[in-house]
Length: 495
Image 1: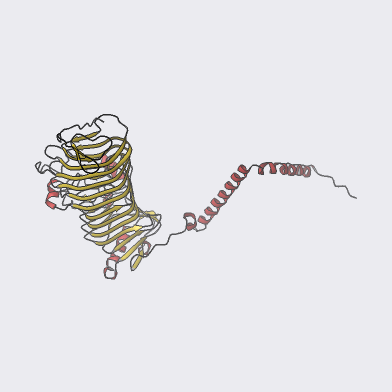
Image 2: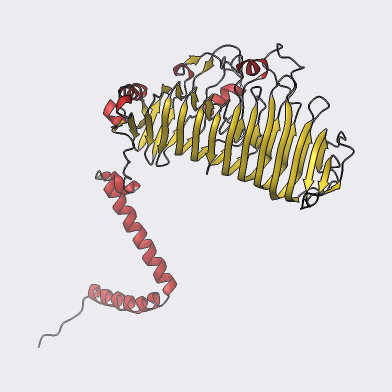
């Protein structure tokens, strides 16, 4: 029999193995530690697998499966068919232009669809054509080039007299169209990014000689659908339908920094008719929505109102201006507007009507219902001295009329001043109605429902208590108290 003598190395190995056997049961006895260990191991395995897949060319696994693009027109093209490169560096303007030109020849066949696939597609401004669908795939980003020399100059809008910020020509929009019919901009929530940071900085430094351009502007057109996309960082107004009919904007996200992104309005319907804006989220550096119709004598002469507009199911934020505004450029008139199911959060103002002597025209038949204010400084604002004019040629005797404005179902919390309606002797506010209002306050000063030169009524009980300018009716519509002081002024801008 041969005796086996263990070497020092073997003895040490056996000792470590026995020590490991003792440690393993103790380690596994804690289910929390075991779960954590398995989770980390699984995460690490997936991470390494994905990294290797990407290096091996399987990029789709890293980003998730490619969502198929539906064919919404008889003929569909991919942007890459025209030589585009989605690296965020290559300028793809010519590719967009060639694609649009190809679609323009398909009108008799029902038009064409341009698919923008995943990637970052840098471009200068380009025009759309009739009977066209622009489809942005998931993770597709159209980037606006930041150098203004690539942005064409256009004549000023006829209802504004000249460029909104400077006399003379204005910069065009990144995506533009005029005198078109049957336009669709949609996708799997792809993004159009104006890269407005350079524009905002130059504007503040007064280095621009022309009015900045919008991100998307469609003019003198009809049958427009914009849905399921994200718009962000516009140089100026974000989405500007001008003198258009039959417009639907649905499920659109619009973003810009809430500070230091000047005039980045979300949606500006301008002299538009028959329009629906619904199911959108907007957080920008100016008004989330501003309904317009021209500026002073130029808007009066152009004479195109904004009318029959429905805004519903929105969440909006504006720390600089207001959630939903009408005006101040409303010289063609604004009527038959309904705003319903709206949440305004962390904003300076919730809803606002703004105008001034010189505007002329009217704001009438406006309905607000089911509004919620959350952390808003001023809830409802009507302002009649917004004295900003295109030039000295305006007529100060051209005063607008404000009438037939209804508020119902107004609720919220954290509101400093719920109502501030500032009419004047030359521009009184007529036939305003409040019903079903209860707003939680952050300020206990007496005059927080502020009125001046206002005529109207309150139906039922509302909170806070209304101003003395308004007649009181019970829930059945029976007169309880008639106001004898419609011209009383208790406006206080100090809080």
